[in-house]
Structure formats: structure tokens, C-alpha cells
Length: 262
Ligand code: ATP
Image (cartoon, rainbow, N blue to C red; front, side, top):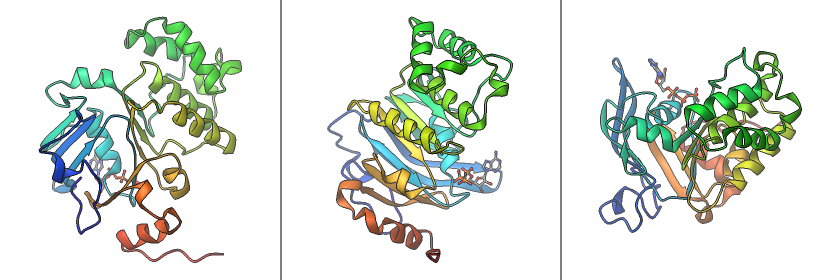
């Protein structure tokens, strides 16, 4: 990962891209994304080994969602190379989509269908073997089994979010992109999600998560980065940092004052 300043000390970062020891799960080089005259991403580099859980922090408008959209093929890079599992997000977009699961502000659910029908629809689309069984098992895992025959339009925001987690996991993606996944979840649902995410860690599945919550973001991840104005300004292994002072690090990186305690 290329970072402004001297905050990058992660093995497998941009400096070691030339001689990777393991095929990268995600490889990004000089990624730029413009919206008209606005530069949302301004030269991002990243290399993630399979099995890595990376959390990206950053203030509003830093480019986090844009970065996730590029990785999930929802938007095209203006410039640069972006590979997921060795596949190019532009040239091999259908292949990339099969490998990626996305949880974002948009749940991609159909309000007129029930929870089960939604999952069965997506299972069909992804050609998931034993789709119904997989759907039922995920509904149980996300604590939605008793509501699976209700229309999703009647679900609370948190229930829809939980169902969208199940949707994203249906095809057992090798890369999971979680854009503020805890938004709208109550304490219980947050705990369920945290447990589900931990359960997904099998040494090969790669996860990238964005969040504004420092505690949730640091828990369970093994690499942490900060994006500011379309560039990574910080990238460390969690094992190498003092997590208790990370809040201070964050506010220093984003050039903001620490909020005063009550
Ligand atoms: P937040 O924490 O508020 O969700 P973010 O880090 O996810 O912010 P992005 O949503 O990626 O930030 O936005 C990065 C910049 O790109 C912002 O200035 C935003 O206004 C701009 N932007 C994002 N999407 C579009 C779009 N479709 N058209 C024009 N500008 C956009």
C-alpha cells in the first residue's frame, strides 16, 4: 500500500509488490478515480494476501466507498490496475463478481419478496448448489429464521442489514467487502455479525471493512489503514501497534482534534 508519509511498515505493501511470495487476493496499483473534476481516489496501491482482514478508517468523503465500489466492479477505475484473485475488475468483471460478496448502504434486497425468497433468488443467480439449504442455514445464522416468510419491506433496518449479510455470504465469496456493516444494527445484532465475521476467518477468505467505529474496526482485523482525501496515509499490522492509542493516531492522520470526553 502506498502511503503518504512514513506510516507504512506492512510486509506485502507496495514496496514488496515486485516479488510476492503468495498470489495476491487483492492487488491495486496506482488506482485513480475521478468523478468529473473531483479526484475521489488519487493513486492508491494495495496488496493483500489471502486470509487478511483489513479495516479501513477515514473521514466522510475520503473515498472509502468509492474504493469498495471499484473492487466490486460497481464503478470503473479512471486509471490504474485492480485485480481480485488475479482477475481484472474491468476486463474480467463477471469473474470478479463471482468472487466478491458486498455489504453496503444498499442492501440489494427486494421489498416485495420474503427473506427466504430473496435469498433463493440470489442463490439461483449465483448458481449456489443446494441454494435453499444454504439460504435456510444463513437465515438461522443471522437470527432471521422466524421471520423468513415475511416480506422484507416489513423488516426493520437492522433486520434488512442482517439479511443483506446473508445475501453477501450465499456464494461463499473469497473476498468480502463490508462498507460500514454495523450501521443500523443493535447491540445483539452487532455481536452476531462480529461472531459471523470471526467464523468466516479460515485463513483463505479475505475481508476489507470500512467503519467509523474504532473499537469495532480494530476488533478482529489484522491490518488497519487510514484513507484521507483519496490516499492511504497509514497502514499497519494490528499486531505491531498499540491499539489503545489508535484513536489519537487516527485524529493526527486526519488532521482533526480529538473530541473532548464528557
Ligand atoms: P463516507 O464516510 O461519508 O461514507 P467515503 O469515504 O465513503 O465517505 P466516498 O463516498 O467514496 O467517501 O466519496 C468520495 C468523494 O467522491 C466525495 O467527495 C464524494 O462526494 C465523491 N463522490 C462519490 N460518489 C460520487 C458520484 N457518484 N458522483 C460524484 N461524486 C461522487
